Amino acid sequence: MDKLITSSPLSRGWLNQIISEVKKRISSVRYEESKHYAVLKSSAPGRAFVQLNPQPNQIRLFTPFDPSYDTVLKPSHSSWKRYPSVFVIKAEDTIDKAIDLIIRSYEEDR
Image 1 (cartoon, rainbow, N blue to C red):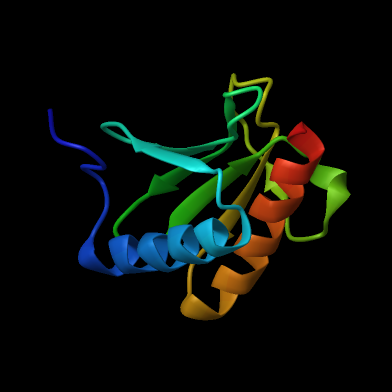
Image 2 (tube, one colour; image 1 turned 120 degrees about the vertical axis):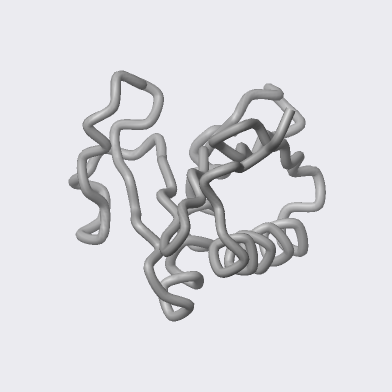
């Protein structure tokens, strides 16, 4: 089965930067990929606390926060009640904000 089939070398590079930095800060985080999504899981309770959807020119980061939590978040328009908001990574200068949101998602999940 192919994984992250909608990604590109650009979005894969961003994803690798994000995962590398998150793993430096949260050593117990687990990373998994599927056909369209990547997830970050905490060791306890062992469920995904964010989902990432790499596309050719962006990565959508789905978070557990209400869209009003931060001005950069938008409603996800998804049927996932677990991830009501999305942050779109469209450039390298938005990676730090994505990492911040991921770290805060992890802390909220604990």
